Structure formats: C-alpha cells, structure tokens
Image 1 (cartoon, rainbow, N blue to C red):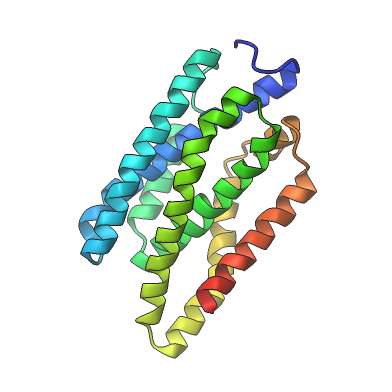
Image 2: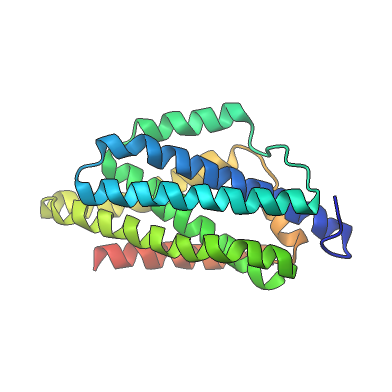
Length: 214
C-alpha cells in the first residue's frame, strides 16, 4: 500500500473501510437495479434508476482512489454473505425494502462514514465528497417513498409499521454484525471513538423514525 498517512495502523484501517464502502455501494447499485421493474410507480422507478447511476459513479470513484493508493482491493465481505443479503432484499415487501435499505444501509451507513471525513487524509476526504453528497439525495428519496407507503395505510397499520421499525433496524444490524468484520476497530484506528459513534448512530435512527411518524 502506498503511504496515505504516517500511521501504518491508520493506513491499513482506512484501506479496509474504503474497500468496504465500495462493496456496499456496489451492493446498493445491484439491489436498486433489481427492484426497478417491481417498484410501485414511475416516480419510484425513476428514483431507483437515478440511484443506480449514482452508485455506479461512486464505485468508479472509489475503485480509482483505491488503485492510486495501492490498497489491496480484496473484498472484505465474502461473496457468500453478499449472496445472502441479496436474497434477503429480493424477498422484501416494498415498505421493508425501503426501511432496510434507506434507514439502515444508506442513512446510518453514510452517517458512520461522515464521522470519518474530518479525520481522513485529503485524498480520501475528496474521494468521499461526491458519494456523500449523493447519499443525502438517496436518503431523501427513501424517506419520501416511505411516507407515501405509510400515508396509504390505515391508521392502525401505519402505527404498527412505525412501531416495528426499530426492531427491523436492529434485526438487519444484527445480521450485518454476524459477518464478524472488525468495522468498529477500523473506525477507531482512523480516529473515531466507539461510544461517540454509537451515540451518533442511535440519535440518527431516532431522528429518522420521528420524521416518518410526524
């Protein structure tokens, strides 16, 4: 690996995080592409199609930066685990697809990456700039689609769906944690604090669900 920071521990951890981020964007691109045909209306299909293009650009940006740094591009998420996640998302109803993808992977995932940006080397920070800007649009799209689904429900079903969202989030987070990747160790190695990271993510989750319930 070429030098991206004087601290070798930082360089190794940031390398792993960049590869992970690229894998996640590739996964999002693929699940959005697979969902276009069955999305409920034209607006949803257009939003997903736009996101496919955005994620493709993100993967290209990150792969280019990873190559320039000489980072080992070996995937950190095993292919068999990605296949399991693809199967999970293919089987989800629209409201659950939106919850899992946009509340967990997009919103909480990008929030975690945001905590790294001030600590990153200039090149890595620039490589994350466009992807994180786009993630704001993606989360807004997901929340908008969730509101549409929730508003079409009966009051009792809407209340039950909202009440169940924290459990859905926890279930997907548990599935991701079962991958046993030392992600929090990598975050700490680049300068974040574990407790602060968890507080930020918990607060973001509560904020998103409160916005949907309003």
